[in-house]
Length: 130
Image 1 (tube, rainbow, N blue to C red):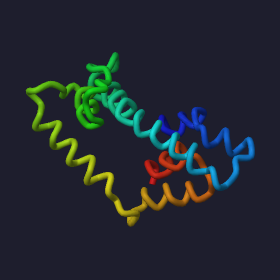
Image 2 (image 1 turned 90 degrees about the vertical axis):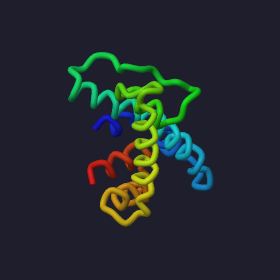
Image 3 (image 1 turned 60 degrees about the vertical axis):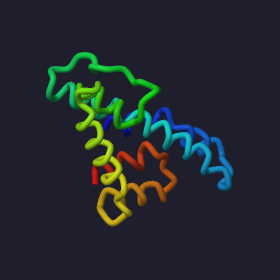
Image 4 (image 1 turned 120 degrees about the vertical axis):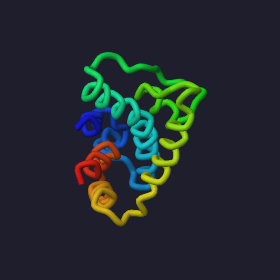
């Protein structure tokens, strides 16, 4: 639900509504995809914080000098040198999990909704529901 709620920020949806040329679909779709990827760790960490830690602020801000998985681990409360093994494991898990190859329900749902010219926020949200 959090991902589909971000649909209002979609550059593709706005450009498509304004008559975007088909040859130019890729650019706002790419922008939306990068925007979504940047937001996912914060969304997941906030859900974790609300579900298992009683809510409140996240334990860490995004560190632009670190990678995606390090920041996600830090937002889960597993940042710093003492948690390097967890961070490495999370990095490996996210890489393997992200390589679905399209053979499962969630990947199929994402492709299907995306093929109907929905923006990446709605497409990814459909995959999460699959």
